[in-house]
Length: 194
Image (cartoon, rainbow, N blue to C red):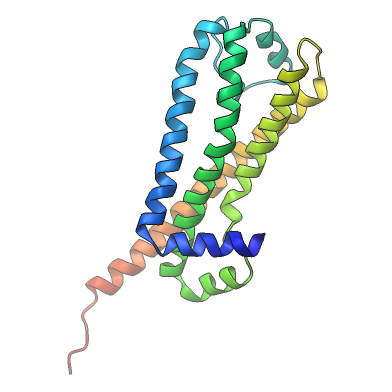
């Protein structure tokens, strides 16, 4: 599985149109999520979907579920379905950008990462996002029964997702700056003309 994922990331990092398709997938799914997020407060006594609340506490899940209307549950089910795709697209965009940048910043390090099947590391937040989604789905599906374990695991996954996401953004950003610096240095350095 990691081999195919690694090969997919390499392939996308070498093709502008494949990268644009990933960006289109990320943008499209983000548009759907934001559209639902805008509608959500009117059907939940002012709350956004759980996934959009970065400071959500486990106990708040059940407090908020008390205010969910049937329309809120319907919208949240659509939100949940799309929120399995969005983090995948986002992770693949970051992995592709990271692979592209690393290949241009340091071909030798890139080769080691590619050969070791490590180019998928920017998908770590995706895994935590999926764990958050699974546990929120468990909590929402079980309602009105309170499944405290599901809410606690969802919030813990959210914290891990956010922490790893900030780390991935920083590392990919650094790689892009490094690659740009290397490219500019090569472009602007005088060439030997013999």
